[in-house]
Every structure is written in structure tokens, then in C-alpha cells.
Image 1: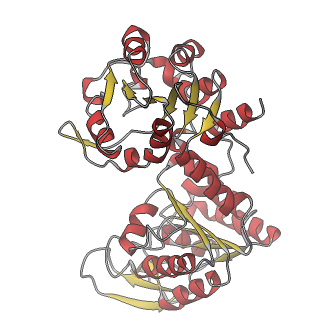
Image 2: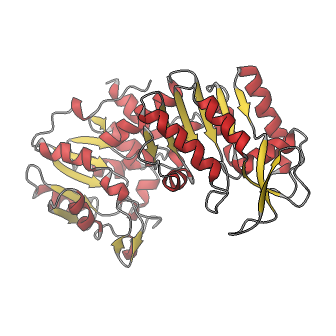
Length: 402
């Protein structure tokens, strides 16, 4: 388990607290189009303001590459942040370091919130520049990282800064790490992973890590076709990476050695193309014709997976099981997700999901709020599944030992 300090370890009344958040949100016509990432920081920011901290939120937006890009200013986010915080006034500083930032921070009172300008307007942010981190550190007394979604980047605000001030994880970071550790590092067994999506090549490291830690690995989506091809099963015109057959067989061999059971489809829903209203049929996995495309798992495969998950205590989910965007090829994703959600609601399973199209698939299935934890962290989530050390997390762990 990763040891790290949390907000409960900080005495913040009257103190300046730099909070690294991820406000890299979608914008439309100069306004926030989706405030989900902003809203998820509310538990951390509210906890700090309620204790009388002077909260200084720092974030990036887009990829300005070390120069000022007006369209990527964080100024329009102050309104959405104020709304998320229940109507609280949020001040803005037109730079994240230097005289402008220092002036705005100096004018703060206890419980105030300030949002600083885009960190990536300075090349030192992505360069993890020590001098830039020191300029940021001069604005605060404490550092809180609440941006797990940025923790896989060794940037000044996620790595270097953590070593310059007393550091702790925010509530969102804490929840994310606890959920991921509970499902991957120290799960209740039996533990299963459901991994779908289009390509084996993008998830080789994920699969290689999971077979060493899971009791059951369910493979679906286009990547299941690659595994079937590797086993000598005809997959017709299905999406696959036939040149990855060797890698797929290596994963199967690693799974066998580790005692992890890999579950592949035994039947499938096929059609001649992926389009709305196309005729489809269910076939055994050994009866796919040359012109067929495998677009979803068949009912026997769905029932088999649900039965297997019925005996599991922990579940890690990454990626859809079929072409869920087009009915009826959403049946497997919907049914298996709903079964996992039911076990979670009953208290029988810890279920953690994230990465890629996973959130959209769970929303489509109507269960995104029923899983134990759904991560929106994207790249950081996948790198954690790969077993990599994340610089932002490692920095918090290192600081906890001081």
C-alpha cells in the first residue's frame, strides 16, 4: 500500500495552501462545457476553506507549450469554480508566479480561494524546472496534490513542488489511490479484471501486469479477436491486430504460469458491417464466416462472465466488451456492467473502473454511479494498471517519510 499524508495531517488555519487540481476541462465559446473535473475537487477545496486555509488552486489547460495562449487562460474557469463551491467568490491571478500572483495571494483572507493562471504558460512546468517550482513554492505554506490524473507526469507542479513544501494528498487523490490499491495492490480475492477496447498493442503492459495479479482476466472488444486469431480461430473480417498474435500468446503463457484464467468469447454477435440497423446474428466462436465482423460477445459468453464475476470480491474494469456505441452491440457491456453494479450495491464486490471509453460505456449502461469508484484519470489510470511508478504519487510517498 502507498503511504501518503492526507488533509487530516495538515493544520491549515490561516495558512496558504497550494492545491494542484486538474482543471483541464472542455471549453466551448469561452465557457466551461463540462465541469465534472472542477466539481470533483470540491471535497478538498471545501475542507480547506472550512478550516480557514487560504486556498491557491493551480492547474494547466491544454497544451500552450510554454507560451501565453489567450484561448487557454484559466480566467473563465473562476465562474464555474465559484458555482461548484456553492457560490463562493473566486479571485484570479493573471500569472501563476511573479508579482501578479504574489499580489493576489498577499491580499487573501482566511477561507478565500484564488485560481492562478495556466501553469503551462511557463516552459518550466512541463520541464519540471526546479527554479520554477521554487517560485510556485514561495506562494504557499503547504502543498496538496488533488490531481491523480496528472500524477503520471513529472512536471514542476506535480513532482518538484511536492519536495519543497509539506505535502499531502487531497480527497480526490486519496480516494483514487485507495480505490486502485484496493482493486489491484491488495484486493480481496477472488479478483477479476475486465479488459476491452480495440487494440492489444496499446495495452500490452496493462495485460502483462494484470495476469500477474488477477485470478480471472476477461478479454473483450477488438483485442479479444486478436487473442482468438492467435489461438488459430477464424475471425473473418473482424477488427484485430493479426501481427500481435505472438504477443497475445506470450500473455496467455504468462497467465498460465501465474495461475490467472483468461476468459475469451465462446460465441459472438456478428454482422457484415458496423452500422445502425444492420442485420446481425449469434454464432459459435468457431463459426465466424470470412465476411463476418465480430461486434459483441454472444449470450453464452455473457452468461459465463456474469457467473464467474458472481464469485469475485474485487473487480478492475477497463474498456468496453463490444461496439457499445451502436445497438445491439452494447448488450455484453451493458449486461456485465449491470451485474457488477448489482454485486457492488449489495456490498459483495469492490468495483473500480476507468480509462479510455470505460466511463462512457458505464454511463451508457446506466451504472456509472453504482461502481465503487470510477476514475476519469485516463493516462494515469492506465499507467497505474501497467504497474508503473507515477512521479506525482511517488513524490507524496517520499514526503510522507519525512
